[in-house]
Structure formats: C-alpha cells, structure tokens
Image 1 (cartoon, rainbow, N blue to C red):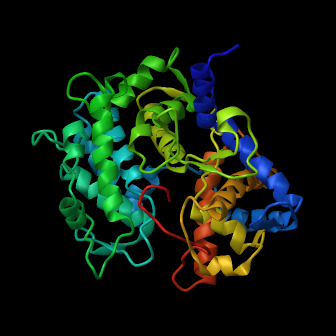
Image 2 (spheres, rainbow, N blue to C red; image 1 turned 135 degrees about the vertical axis):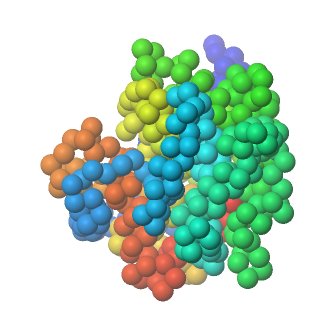
Length: 414
C-alpha cells in the first residue's frame, strides 16, 4: 500500500495538473447543464451566439488572424507605443541568456502585481501624457517601477528582480510608484506589497529555481534551460515549476501537509478522490504567468510545446462574457448585487464554469475560422478573443465597464 506521505504528494501533484483543472471544471459544467448546481444555471443554447460575438471581435482586431498569445507582453505596448522595442535596443549588448533573465524578472513581477485594479484607479504616464486604467494601467505602472530599479538591490543593475530587492518593496514605494491616494484608490495595494515581499523570501529560499548566488527571478529561465530536452520544453513543465516555486507566496490559502496550494478552492460538487476530493484548482495568475514566460523562452531558442495542455483563465473578463451573453444565469438574482469573497462557493462555481465554457467556445471558433487547434490554440483565443470580448460587452452593458459580479479583491487572485 502507498504510504500516507506518498498519497499526500500525489494529491498535491493532482491539484497542480492542468488536466485536473479541466476535468473538475467540465464536471461542474455537466452538473450545470443538468440543472444540479446551487448558484448558476447554464443555457448552453446561447453558446453559439457567444462564439459569433467573439468571432466578430477577433476579426475586427486581428483581420489576418495573426493573434499573439494572451500574455503580459501585450500590455507593455499599450497606446501604440513600442516601449518593448526601445527596451530591447538598450538590452541588445547583453548576452541572449541575460536578456531572457531580464524578461523573466519583468514578466513575473508585473503579472503578480496585476490582480485587478478596481474601477476607480488610474495611472498617468508622464512620458506620453496618457492615463491608463485596469490591466493596462497596472502593466505600465509596474513597467516603470521595474525600469527604475524598484525590484533590484543593486544600483548598477536596476533591471532585475532579486531576493533582497523584492523583500524591500514597501507600501510607501509602491503607493508612490502606482500613484495611489485617497482620490485614486488601488484595490488590494497592501496585499500586493506583501506578495512582493513574500516573493523575495521565496526567491532567497529556493536556490534550485532561483540560483545559489545573487538569487533573482530571472534565474528561473536557467532552470527551464536545464529541463528542456533537445531544446524542447512542454508548457505543463513551466506551469509545474511556477506553481511549486511560487507556492509560499499566496496568503491565507488552503494547505495540504503544510504545502500552500494557491488558487485552489473547495466546492462540494467538485468530485475527485483522496485529499484532493472536493477541491477545484484554477491557478489563474500562475497560468497567465506561464503564458507570459513562453515568449522570452522562445526568443532565447527554447521551443515550448503542448501549450493547449494549459486551460483558459478563470477571471472576471472571461467569466463576465458568459454572464453578459446569457450563457450563465445566477440562480438567485440578488447575488449580483452583493460583494463576494474570492473563496465564496458562488465565485468558485462561476470561475470553474468559465474554464469549461472557454474550451467549448474555442471549439466553435476553430470551426468558424476553419483552423486547427495547433493554428489557433487557446492562448490565442483568450487574447483575440474572449478576454477582449468580455471587456467589450461589459462596456456595452455598464457605464463604468465593470464586470457583472462584484468581487472583494486582496490583490492576489483576480
């Protein structure tokens, strides 16, 4: 018989596997279609019209279907300004491996600082005399903070995120960098600072991933190079390392044998066996981060394969699309007027259904475009795509473009 420790390890691995995310989310969708869930009703007949709506958005934005992956890199050039091009020119004299490390430093910090800004927050970029909001605003704010050495402890090497620099990110520094004030509130600001500090501790304590000497986030690139066989790296390998290395940073989360599980939540109808029973893994930020690390790896010559093993992202733009298009309905209407915690069963159910429905929309979109999954992987459909369509329909239906559900943000989930 397997030992208790072995069973525990297996449960942890199961909850970190993208296959489990898909399995449990589709299980809940099947229950929704059978009208057996407590919080949501699914009208699957609305899915075709939803796919048509997303198709229109894709054709308008990417008429040649040259859709990039859904990643943090899209946001850095917001406003049609080639910030990345100018940065790349300044990095051109560095070796390719160091350029990749810098890209990892930037992508990881920026993704982890983007967990929803709230409807009121704004960021003013003086260089362009432009105001940005939401994900784009958070991207540009974190971009400038990174360029100014906000995550580095070495004055001579500002473009890195090292253990000491991350641990010294302060509330005052982030408040100033992100222009936070009583008149410009940022949801979960203190939580973001704590996340950066805990990230620094994780970097210092895990030399296997982040290096023995001068540990930094960028050394995760070197780890992936050692895992690539003949220059080929499965996307799921990236996600596994992200989940394992970042596990200590998540606050107030479910643990198994002392291991922090991150974006994993209980739902009484989730299914499963053993210690993983009744739990729904979603790993939204970690999967978005994985998508965001693929590009610098590929630019450095590592071929990332099996990207569609990853799932769609359980966040409020994708989820809002299905509510606003009538694919999902709240069983109890008053739930749309309340503010919900991320761990509420109602929110877990919504997010799980979102992941499963994204797979179904992807299938319909590929049929509409006459393309294969290889030509249009889910990472492109999200970008082209469902995330963009969710934002558009929110703006059509509500003056402030807010999502259809209100979520209490601590700066670490959405």
